[in-house]
Image: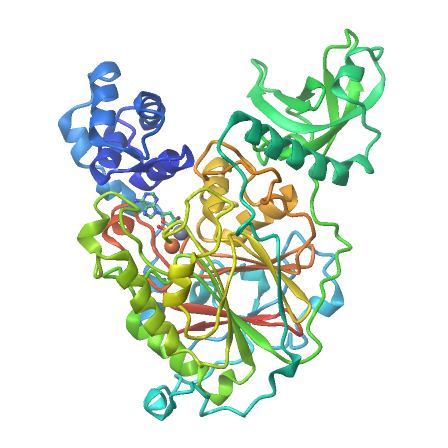
Length: 574
Ligand code: D5M
Ligand code: FE
Ligand code: ZN
């Protein structure tokens, strides 16, 4: 009997916008057809349910798969182990040495990288891929291997003003941080139907503009009256993707005038792109109108994408930013010692140039985020969690510029765009005079545009994409898809909850220089059309739930971005 590893079931469930009780996952994994069982359980669950419970699952299993026996449902966990885990990574994580790797922006897919974004030192030896999971194997060159960071005693020397004792006194006058695209204080959505129409209209307007100049497009209603055999193009939002009986793909696109079907033949090269398509993203299709006029045979597909000619801006001086996320203070698995080692390192001379700290969400573990989460809480009160987080943040040098966006564990609305922390939470985290902005936001640091986004849609990209090219081991590959679609949460109605606003704040209007995300607790460094991609790891050891579904997090990794070169050095503190 086929048995789905629970991790797949979890992803199936979450990609449909639900969390699941652990036992519900176990039951689903044991069903004779787990995918169908997930489908039915999701249908059976009330629309307003946030969590798929064992009751929801039992209901459908009893109804439709009477053959599922209790034994099937109880024993799927060995299968889960077959999936991913590598022991080498765990071994690497247990050493206390600081591992330093440098990634350049060239990936196999981006041979056109500009010279200026290549690292200047490429003579160094190649590191083993297991030493830094998620960092594209091709991209890595070991620049140096440092001895274990000397951290002892640093915090004692640290004075109350947070001056960096191992480091030079600094002149702050060259620093600058600007913020754009922040929803905070601008939210107008009431959740009405009209708001959704406005959001989608805005998405279509802005993304179709990026495509219209590239194809000779016609509105859908004009395509209807074009003679068979005409060459034509259409720019629209993907409304539906279906395979036909003969294995071709029917991709229905919608513009403001109506819908039009396009057909992608399975033997064409462009058929590969159909795997990448998500509903609600905006694309252009070029092709030939069928003889009877009812369909467009696709010759080419275009995504809004980042132009290959994109030239990133860089800072005018040698200065660096630490890009972290997913601290999860309040969880029993919060890696307090590792965080302390990181904070201590920031006080050393070696970290002299690290003047910025960007935190991409999930400061705290939160309360009631997942079922049974309370069993693993170290701090049960959400405000106490932020108080403790603030204490840990105080260990970071007081003269660093800090920018924070919220994530799905934080105490702001779950639906994206998420506004910044409210006044009460800001006053708790006030120590560093940090900047608080929404998720997503573009944070321009000394001229470098950094798109910060927590990353919930990465789960969805990975769940929807067939094959192993894009997985939790290379989250930066999922980030490429978001850039290609020029939207941080392209698919509506799935795992990523989206709030309607009069503008679509999730559109990536300007190509960023750096894209920084977190959420999946896996490290990933890459490059796409000269945009530097960084997915931070996390500061939370594996939770019971993650263990049960075989998610193996990259704990205590701090990617350090050089704002002058956009090179990234990954440091490990566990
Ligand atoms: O997300 C951490 C990662 O783990 C992210 O990929 C989601 C996944 N995850 C962890 N626990 C669960 C449960 N209970 N349901 C669904 N998905 C889960 P984070 O946002 O830090 O929890
Ligand atoms: Fe997280
Ligand atoms: Zn998260």
